[in-house]
Image 1 (cartoon, one colour):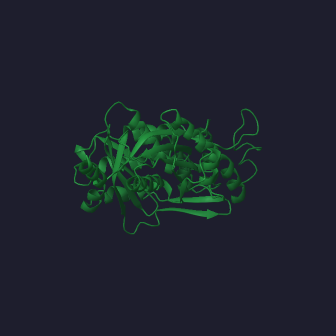
Image 2 (cartoon, helix red, strand yellow):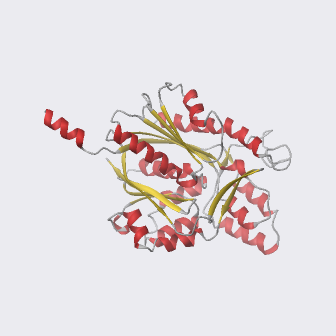
Image 3 (cartoon, one colour):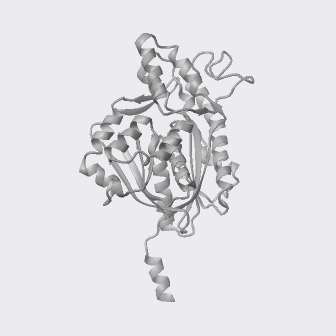
Length: 364
């Protein structure tokens, strides 16, 4: 008995995602934005924008932005964006109020799926706002977590921040078998709309939306195991995705070269080895790819020679919610876990750098 216990203590542990809860606001901004953006373009550029919007693979995107009256929209004269572009300070004040509220809705959804008592660690990822005390402290206080709960805030990493947050949880679970870790990702991308006639910027804004997700992790074998975390940076690509703080919100710079560079990188043995490990892509049944956009999903599908159904959950998430930055991958993982089929595969996200980060996933 003693020998077996010693052996068990020496075996490497990994983290397990027991359940994932998600939340999106209730106001669909997608068609409203398309109309607003197309008014800023003329001629061939307007036709191109509308054609790209129709091919985006997105049907709905949601925003937390307040509406001043029933039936109103954020771009009305009395709306958030109605009287010119609000300064960054006003956008951050809205973030401080709305981001914790949306995060708590995701935690409540998680609570309907699994017990979330006994939390020892809280890891929060968010890159669309800053506030101090931090959003992690606000969430902890509103959940009435004990003051001894250890908190980690992952900020400004963009679309692969969920990977970083889950990686933190993974290392905690490996070092403490009794740890119960709450991971939260929350993004309010709609706070950073830019009034511009530059088609590239409008196409980038077309992708993004608001959303939050929450997951419970521990070393206890239940749900899906996450392991073999990886990170790989594409050379000479740091200018392709940038996120800078301006006087009127955070400004996204998303190059149209991104899908092509990803497809090119996936041809290299080094990138394939980093993402796939020692497996062949065709032998991997489960794929949780961050739904950064239809062209990015196409690049991954074609780059790895996957079947048309391989990225079904990623495409479904993109269609229903758009790109919610760090929350998106969690939505995709939650969809895979809700399916009756066993999970056995890879989770991967691309973001600023240009970098790919991810991990292996497998049902227990």
